[in-house]
Image (cartoon, rainbow, N blue to C red; front, side):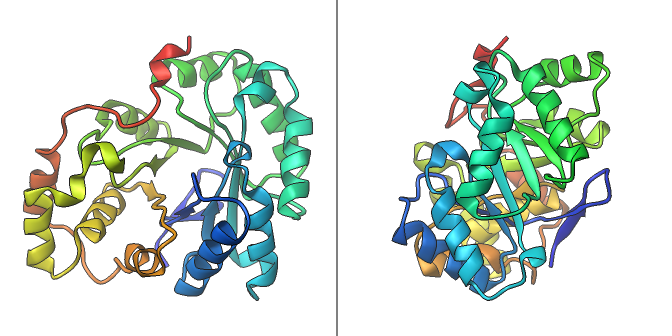
Length: 271
């Protein structure tokens, strides 16, 4: 299995299964079961997704030992702003039906994020979280954490895809030993990058699919990638990327696709 090691020596599977916009109940439950059966060992959910309970049910009933599955969830903005971080965490933990989570993230850098981040550190020190991190934090937000004299996050989950490669933030995180996770790794419907002729050309060379090329691009950049699907064929396909890698010329071609246009929310709006 492809893994990275966070600076606290906890390993994180490099291919995770995202459940954003998957309907709670059977849709999420079936998708997570399929992902785990296909070899995924990293499941990424969040309070705002509304499907933590379904994720937890699939984890409980999949037949795998809990310690073999890396589980991430996130604190939503309203709880950060209201300074209700510990209550939010305990609610997520109850919905998941777990005794701990492997990674807990602040979802956006809204007002109160420093206080919420201190709560994450408390929970980490209490052993309820194996690793802590943030999501959608820019350099200035990470610098504020550093300025406060707090331990740096182990992970920053941000938007990254070939047409929004987010190089400056990725490079900053790497220099500070913060692992980058890519959300919307396939570009979403706005970009339609899987129809891009450059990506199709690289896929033909390696006899793989365009989505496999993009996922491998994230991996070869040293990032954690979080593809999402409810289609069993695509779930399996997105995980099956260990048999090839992109060479220097492939990476140059992929780099040429960057147009610095987001497909999702912009963290620039947060001070």
